[in-house]
Length: 260
Image (cartoon, rainbow, N blue to C red; front, side):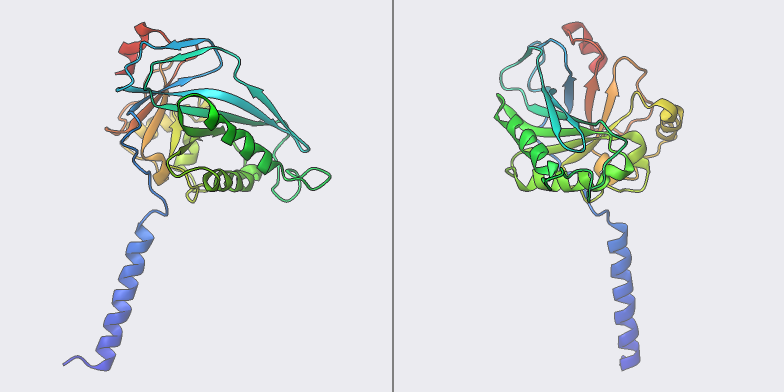
């Protein structure tokens, strides 16, 4: 027969074990979207005719607008270049965010002198991209510095809260973020796309990290890769993940061999 002391010890052990398993579980996971193709084309601010892409195999994430943030306002630069996409393609509208200062703080810099929060202005502009033809998802491209992280968190929460659950919400991520301190682990996004190109001083470090078989420490980064066909493809990428392809010039049918 188990004594009260033995039962108490067993309960403590079970509780400790449950805490261990909870601690081992990531706070957030990539949410697989079976409708979104495994190959996505980034179409940036240049004339693009992508009707040669098979919509069953390729989706398109196009730059819809760039938002420039200052201490007292947000300036919008909407896409001005023509874009042609095959009928039925999965389309994501990308909003690029750039700050014109050395970084903002949530408590002061993102509020105008009258106390108006610029976050809501940015949310409204992002949500408007859902009115563009055939858009099924939105993506935020923002290389936030440390002082902008709380603003970014508030922004993503408001975007997710203000859009239907059927809308895919994704973000780009610096590759270094995916091997770091998991500061965006609680973001309500379907996936974060690690940009494994134009990495500057981190290039060899990240390439060696992947070459050695390592996976991203941040769980949200484990569903996709962002690569450029203008650079050598990183070695030892994990299989069966979505690939976002970038190119510094307009896409053409001759690029298809580079997308395999």
